[in-house]
Image (cartoon, rainbow, N blue to C red):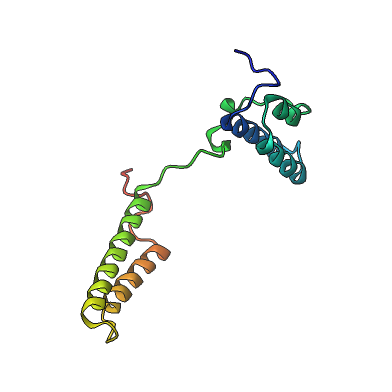
Amino acid sequence: MAATPDMRASDGDRDRVAAALREHCAEGRLTMDEFNERLELVYAGRTFGDLQKLTADLPDIDLRALPATAQPSAERPESKAEKDLRAAWGAWASAVAVTSVIWALTDFGGYFWPMWVAGPWGAIMLVSMIFGTGSKNDGKKR
C-alpha cells in the first residue's frame, strides 16, 4: 500500500527523515538552526504529509547507499585490547567491592584496609592504560 499524506507515520519513518536531515546538514544544505527546527517538527509530525513538508525543498537521499561510517547508528567494533581493558577494570571493581563489603561487615569505622587492594592495583592499571602496554599491532602477526 502506498503511503498517502494523510497516513500516520511510525517512529521508524520519523527516524528515517531525521537521518536524512542529518545528512543534508552534514552536506551543508541546512544550517544548524534550520536542522534543529526541522528535527523538532519531525518528531512532532503525525502523518507522512507532515514529514514530506520538511524535506520537500531537499533532494532525495538513499540512506542505504551511504558509507557505513556516515550512518549515525553504525558503531565501530570494540578491539581485543579494549575488551581486555574493560575486563581488567571489571575485575578490579569487583575485588574492591568485595573487600569493601568484608571491611564494612567486620571492622566498619576502623582502618580502611581495602585501600591496599584498590590503590596499587588501580594505579598499575591506570598507568598501563595511559601509557599503553603490549604490542602496537594488538597481538596480530605480521
